[in-house]
Length: 340
Picture: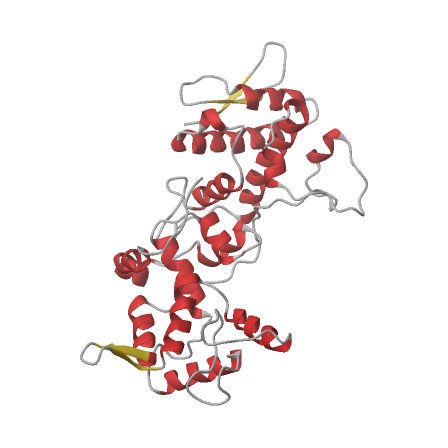
């Protein structure tokens, strides 16, 4: 556990420092605080010490305090998730009753980034360059202490962000049994004849959407191939028409949506579902199965881990708890790298 401790040096004003779980001064944090105490108000020192004490606690719980010079986006994203979940766990199925305010989370993140920018400038600790996008070219270079002003628009942007406007609830999704019903409505295997009955191409498409989390827009690849004069064959990697004219024509997004409407009219799947719900289902399954947010973000192609946290980091208790075991089983066969 890290501790933010108030101290009163002889002949000096009260200030704050950070101790580790063994009640030793965390020297990297103390160096940073000491370098800026004459610039900051006591309240600012206290706030920054509190943020870094929480960061050090998080690293100690992970067993990574001795690797503080090597962390990156996954650790910082996990830190924000840990703060959101009451400083107990990084992944929670049920939402926490008392969530830190957006302003509090922004202050913790700003302190952490300021700490690492100073460590990079003074001791060449490379963490900051992993957390920040570069300064836009239209802005001139700035001084060493420019990182102290977190309000400046010319600051490099963090790869981990705290969003002020959170969507309420969670995105709509399909449960594993609903996805299976959609697949079976497209095509089923007949063991008596040893053949598939139905449209196997449609089953492959919806299975791919559910098991990869990709957007339906990927079907535009087939359209672009045709427009560019690239040969599209039945053996190719693109979805094409096999059963009706125009044969071997590329499958368009409108065709998939027509198929979705036909399934909905038959009562297959929940009311109003769309192919994009499969993407939400995929992300939810990975999170409930224990995958880290940054892994899910990379798999979905999100530019910021915070996008994943905002959309999928909060799973309501009722239904999610009842199907959690099913989600874990559903996602067990997926190949998902989870290295830190």
